[in-house]
Length: 110
Image (cartoon, rainbow, N blue to C red; front, side, top):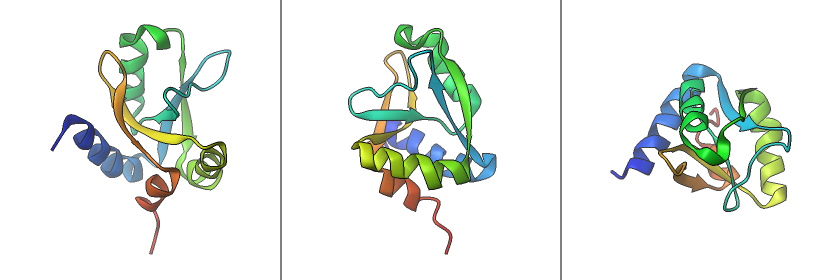
């Protein structure tokens, strides 16, 4: 399993336990790099990226309740043509990007 796949698997495990996702923003809003907006499953993961990636220094971590993310954010990303960046990590904040429909499907209730 690649590191990106491992981070995506952690996202799928951790988000239901946390009941929320985390993103980052600055005075210009939420970043979208390479056609994807990043989200993390734990505040500490987002904080690590803010502290390690020069482009994100000065950003604040924002908590988004899971219901809001599923019901509002993912449809908005879909209509904007953006992907979901899943638990990006490392000095370049990279990782797996998935379609909003795929990310939402991970948490669909039966």
